[in-house]
Length: 113
Figure (cartoon, rainbow, N blue to C red):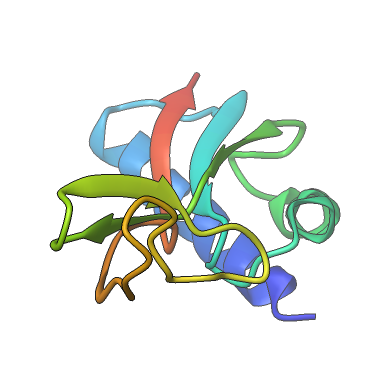
């Protein structure tokens, strides 16, 4: 389960951010997770509970904001959801898209302390 290494990295980064802001306790961490990031939100929640123990995030909750994968069609200037499994074919003009606009995010977007 690679979510444990991701959760550990989230905890470490959140602790660094909190220290830089002069905070010694974090009560919540918000992360943005793209649909194509290869992360299972339920597994990430479980792993976060394990990774946070004994840190400044002990007892903190994890808030996961899921980001829908969206592609851009240069042929007809339309943005569209690619879905899961991803389908990069424009539904408006029936051409393949070569530009993924969002959906691979895996980032901390906020901390509460």
